[in-house]
Amino acid sequence: MSAFGVKADIEHPDRHWYSRCMRSFFSKTWFRVAAGITIAVTILIAVNWPTVTLLSAIASSERRPALLNDASWNDPASAVRFHRRFGENTSEEELAGWLKQNRFEIDHAAHIAKKRVYGLPCNEYIDVTWSSSEDHSIAELEAIISGGGCL
Image (cartoon, rainbow, N blue to C red; front, side, top):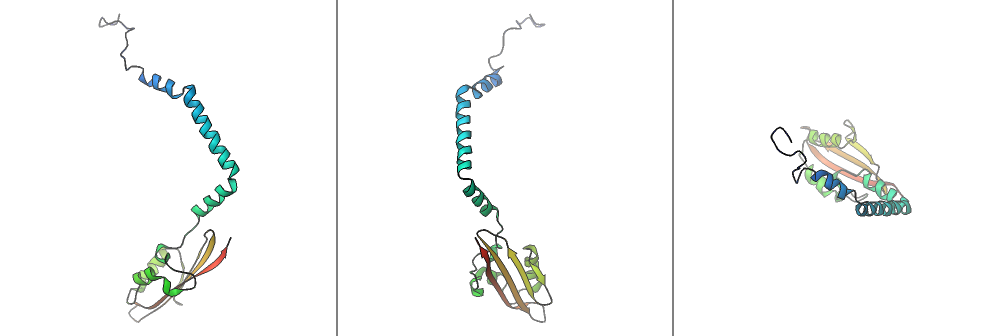
């Protein structure tokens, strides 16, 4: 008897719900299913290791800046989104900020910016050249993307 006159061995029906769940969770059936899935995934990775490695490398490789996604190799006119964003009379400072944000190597005096994109299956070189007017707005702009070697 407890201090309140209630039998101590009477338990609330939900008192051990956690232990009941854990017992069913770690039951033999569940363990066999989990072990089977683990073994199957391990075999798939082991058999397809070169493919898994290549896909992982491609997925994690560097990509060109989004504004240049529509550009074709060696065709400056194909970078439509880039030209639309940085058209004539756009501030040279805006262009320089975007180039810096996208980790280009910038030569302000020569009005040239360069970047090498280490991607898979192909590396790319991006060259951006521009000229500016006296009020430091863009007069001409060109972005050329060229291949830097492919697998």
